[in-house]
Image 1 (cartoon, helix red, strand yellow):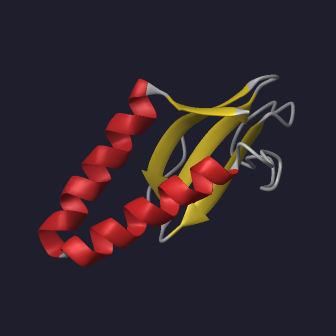
Image 2 (tube, rainbow, N blue to C red; image 1 turned 120 degrees about the vertical axis):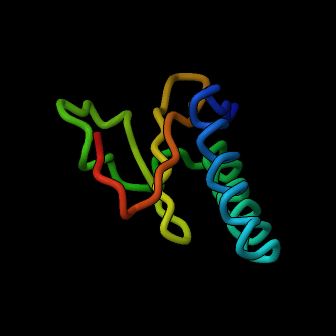
Amino acid sequence: MKVIWSKNSSLQLKEFLKDLKEKSLKAASKVKNEILKTARGLSNNPEIYSPDRFKKDNDGSFRSFEKYSYRVTYQVGKTQVVMLRVRHTSREPL
């Protein structure tokens, strides 16, 4: 399966990393590497993480994982995994 980052999720990740870099380059690098590594791993096993509990009427295709206080939501399709949203866990879900 191919892992694709939506424009929105890519921009959200860049913004969080930009803010984090101002505090610590090392922490920003660690967070970025871990999130990207986890996302790449979804190509082999996209259903490893639980269905997203915040998604209403979730048919099971919307899933999420958390790394270093960041919650990444993605959708599993037939041929691809689409990364949809990156948000800090302290923020309220939509």
